[in-house]
Image: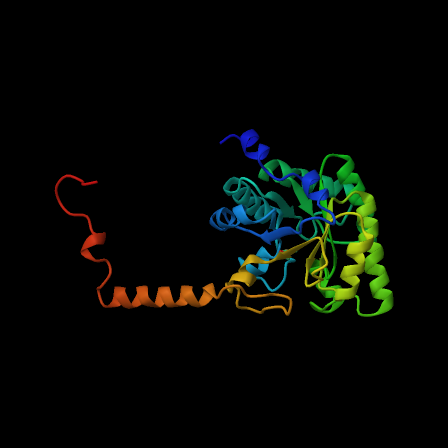
Length: 277
Ligand code: KIV
């Protein structure tokens, strides 16, 4: 399928932007083609999150994730999906230095994956960069509150906005990023009342994760929701399945069959003579 045919049926950035205050926007992360194929019919937005560093690559944080990793996984998800709006996270160190450096990295991601938009973390300090990118044709999704790329500054992955000053700063960050042109903003790991207030005050869709049911949409890391990521489960995750257990059981059954020579059976072996069927 040509990329023109591919993009024509996709949910677009302006369509998502127009959903502020409307039907909740369903978002999930996807890192691979098979998972993207399964999720695509059910979601509005697929995010190739830099959480893939922890979930897929086994790093302790998202900091070691490279642009090349994001491009490879972003391209796979884009190829395997037809309707969801595909957004790629910008990894640590590729956009913070200057608007120009951010543009070069984001333009590579857009050109080499075919995604519709990029996501980057940060508040007031990223305003100039967001405006620079949007003015040059790169739709940007913001990400404020608990921003995992700054976990060294926070001293860990903790809920944000418990104190008044911090809450005011996060609200101001969201307002500033929206004002700079972001089409939507992820609010992660914040006090519920604060996320509710941000959703009320900020004119673009607010996508919550560990935020509030009042947000304009929700996102989770798919492997958390499916029980496929065992390292830790944040409080804000609801496990809808325990696929990790099913994988362990299936693989243990396979190992038992191989050791007992029950697999492969005659039905899995090729006979002699002309091929049938
Ligand atoms: O990296 C990621 O997966 C994210 C989402 C959880 C919002 O940023």
